Image 1 (cartoon, rainbow, N blue to C red):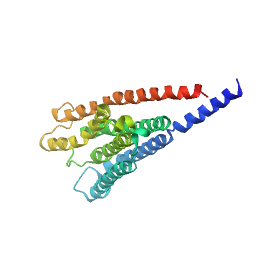
Image 2 (spheres, rainbow, N blue to C red; image 1 turned 30 degrees about the vertical axis):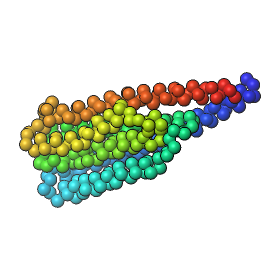
Image 3 (cartoon, rainbow, N blue to C red; image 1 turned 120 degrees about the vertical axis):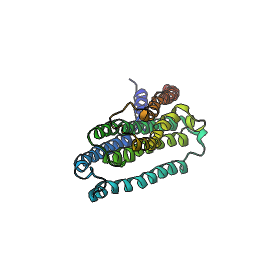
Image 4 (cartoon, rainbow, N blue to C red; image 1 turned 180 degrees about the vertical axis):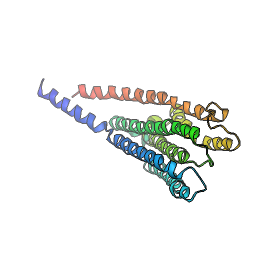
Length: 257
């Protein structure tokens, strides 16, 4: 191998390393995973000890205080992330260099990894354990320990992650900034609408006893909006298509060295 080829190869590796960086996504998922395990341990202990009687003083201390703290913090985080991404948006989006566009696409994939990770915890794990809780313990309030961690904590967290991913694409990547991606919009909006559906769910449980009837029509909204997650495949295909196009440009640059 000639010296020129060796230099080209080394330069290509450095170029790729500077573009592909999933470390922030991995750190975010590690931190979130640790947090989720921690709150699940908290629920296991204080759910039975202080979460069975909503009229008891300890329920206010160990559960309602969590809910009144998490909701405003989540709202602030939602607004802060969206506001920051919009304020720092690329105001000359059509002049983005191919290399920088590739880096941003890889970063967007990292956002989507975190989003998918949080959707799993919220819409799968905590949702299923909530069903187990209500098949075991008859609720005397809509704000059960399980709901406080599921509906009002894990759901807003994945909504914030999805909002961040969507806004990142809209403010930094020409492919998504110049036009609305229907697949990307559905990928965010579908799981987002599960949260408003919680209101319908709680209203229905107030009038009908359906703790074990998972197939009841009242629960169909969760399934309907949950299936919107399949739009993930359309979003990924759009991203990969652009990545392939940019990769061909990089290949021409390397061969020209």
